[in-house]
Image (cartoon, rainbow, N blue to C red; front, side, top):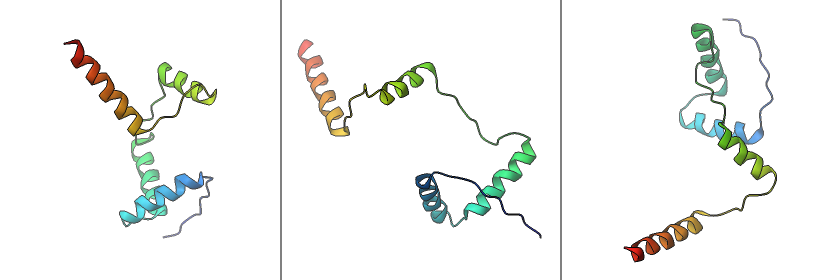
Length: 92
C-alpha cells in the first residue's frame, strides 16, 4: 500500500507524553494518527467530543494569566481541609 507523509507541529511536551503512553500501548504515533483519520472519515466528524470551557473556567484561566492566583500544593490544601473540619466539629 502506498502511503503519504503528513507533517504536523506539536508542542514537544505533548509529543513526549503521548509517545510515552503509546509506547506502553505498543503503538506508534503513525498508527494512532491513521486510526484517527479513518474514524474521521467513517464518522464524518472528529471522533471525540471537544468541549469549550465554560465562563467560570475561562475567568479562572484569565486570572492565572494576570497573575492573580496563588500557587498551592496538595499538602497545603489538605491542611486547609483538616483545619476546616476541626472548625466544623467545634461548632457542633
